[in-house]
Length: 265
Image (cartoon, rainbow, N blue to C red; front, side, top):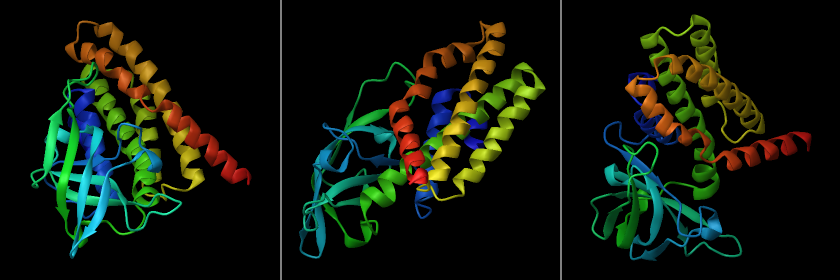
């Protein structure tokens, strides 16, 4: 919320929410510097789609593979890389998360062209060739269940909160109606409460779906007020960047439907 309110555009609000989400998931991450979660590969981000591998070598591990789409990859000082644990894989793919410095030998960062929305937020393809990983740099437990799946919920909460806080900033700057600000803050308080709960619980997913629906209504009202200042450069950036709000919509709908199924069961 603080990062979103300090931002002057949606891209920086998103970036602050993304960084806050990583630290909510992993409180031991360094407070300074950037981090990036590296999951998606050429075939997707499900366990079977991930081909990056960790193999044992001596007292440690060796990481090989590539990541197709890493948000803030070019800026990342620390990469959190999802990879197959070759020694543990059987009928079910076993994933681990490795902490890797962006400057480690064998790491290559390939810049991607700017996206048509939030172009300030960079993305990269990452390549890992024989990267040495110490045992203490592997996060404990199952990489998919404990980190990848949880992060989807944690990221939605933090990024949406940052976006709404950014709108509160614009509402104050442009003197939008007070009741719009009040209702936006009410959703922010609800999201803060959800962020303190278990991100795997179906009730959290259902409540989050409701909060995101309310946020969409608030965005519509904000745009109606913003249109009265159509020459405002911030409004032009918002119109360019608002496509970000629809990213991963199908995945959210699937998550909500599964949450209802779990509660009915």
